[in-house]
Amino acid sequence: MTGTVADYALIGDCETAALVGRNGSIDWLCWPRFDSPACFAALLGMPANGHWIVSPTDNARTIRRYRPHTLILETTFKTNEGQVTLIDFMPARERFPRIVRMIRGDRGAVQMRMDLRLRFGYGRRSPSIATSGSRIIAIAGPDRLALYSSILTRTEGNDVVAAFTIQAGETVTFELAGVDVSQRKHSRNSPEVLLKKTESWWRHWTSRLAYRGPHADATERSLITLKALIYAPTGGIVAAPTTSMPETPGGSRNWDYRYCWLRDATFTLLGFIHAGYRNEARDWKNWLLHAAVRNPGRLRILYDVTGKTIHNEWKVSWLRGYRGAVPVRVGNAASKQLQLDIFGELADALYQAGIPRAKKPAFRLLVKLLNHLEKRWHRPDHGIWEVRGETRQFTHSKVMCWVAFDRAIRAAEEIGFTAPLRKWRAVRKEIHDSVCQSGFSARLGSFVQSYGSRKVDASLLLLPLVGFLPPQDPRIMGTVRLIEKRLVRQGFVMRSEKEKGHKREGAFLPCSFWLADYYDLAHRKKAARRSLRRLLRVRNDLGLLSEEYDPDRRSLTGNFPQALSHVALVNTIINLHTKIGPSRQRSSAGCRHWAL
Image (cartoon, rainbow, N blue to C red; front, side):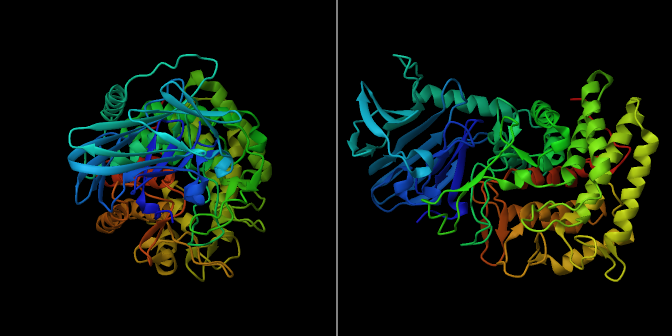
């Protein structure tokens, strides 16, 4: 059986990423980019669907860590006979992706095994194996990978295996790399050189961290994780490197998160900016512009890493799912939903990034977005949680429509661009009045999930964070009190109230960070810091967070690691320990914005 979510570590090269289990098994890898078909899919099936394990043959106690300031994973195995350390990393991408695995003998003599089981096409296609000089080549149609080894290996059918004993002071290395069959020679650095270069690359990147306050180590680890989830050629950031990790054990809400969500735009932009990573923020902004400018009138909630529309969602019938949770999905049908909040997210991101006079095309895009939104904001949509059912008049969606007009008006006023300000101000007021009248229940003393509903929703925590109403407004305070009563379990915030016919899911971790951000804005510092400490404790031993947390089982659930959870962690830490963090900047009309 595959490990728990928390048992996995992340390694990556900023174009794809692998999950490495505590037992030394790589159980998930999409090759050559995040949304490519997996060549190791044991995470969502069985070892027969592809994995690469390097581990002692005897039982071992395991300790693991990342090398300081890097994404280089070290897993130490202690047996009765000795101790070895497995060092896993992916060098920064050059021509081909590579995974390097180095086994260092620390003490005594330890018997080891290596089993490389490549299965292309999400665990379905076995490669043919051939030997070419010092390398073993696996070929399945257009997929070609080569294994380089410092020890003798052998083939067993479609697999490559090895058994060896490693003594103290010895090092054994394996490298899995892409192959260009048109090249007769494959230029390679030694694994030791690659390790030094990779460590230097990460240390140089982390040295740019501007935040030096409390929890700086957690901030850095989350930023390293976010950097690893950036598709470097375009600047797009995937929500997670995995698909179909269930929100509830054995459940069917299993979605493909290997794409880029516009909804995360402003959170991500401000997180990078306030942490000192303006280049990443600029690349993300440029990816947003590239994705949106193609067809502003048909803005989608998510795109692939290159900014292209995702057209299909299909089920991988031959995979039995993570611990039996089916179906396994590839693609995401939410890309076809109407989700009006993304207009506000995109407008806010462009505004926060700054639109100088030299960037008139960005403002022209805003004008086009608002021309479309003016005709559509009245419509029901699928909402922030991408409900797969009837559309509704979601309160959060309307608020984000208000944000779109508000930020465009601010940009025009501050920069002096010509714009139909009188019309925009009228629409902004109309939306605000609509939300306050139809999205608020006087009987409950709270805003509600959708017009006419009696349920609350954690997305309502965003109303003060985006500046729709101040945090001390009685309507906001009443909403937070009702959220605390109905949605908070053991200190963690659920997305929404349980629906009939569905299993109770875990707490959506970003929502818990949003509550801490609200406490901070409302000057409830002790509550904010207590919430942050609670959230920091649920990270796994390597500082990684998934999409959700199950307070009853005390386990991470959902796709892993989740970019938005780590963005929220970064933002909340900076909010609580700096004078003007992302939340204050976003919620206050007079705060500085940036010129990226």
